[in-house]
Length: 108
Image: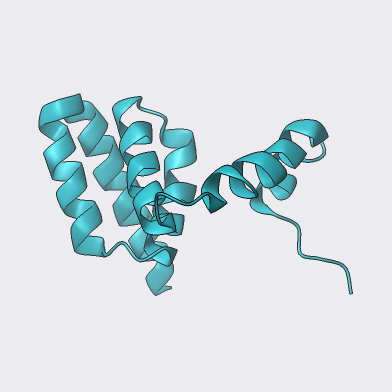
């Protein structure tokens, strides 16, 4: 039985196969597996960076991953509220809308 394709392979594997491979092997296969930060903490750091840099194209995936890695809806909501004052209101408003969409989709 073939392995399930990763999110990177599904999203960009046919266009940039090497980037998809590096995403799987280096980013998620090495960096995310290192000691020092739990997957939960790595998710919080990643979500924070994406919000701060207004990288909303990657935010939905990482919000879902953050929930899978143990962050609660309340913790993500509080992080977004806190970031409004550190990274700008538009960044936080966009992140809040994305979190709402992720949570709504999870209920369907």
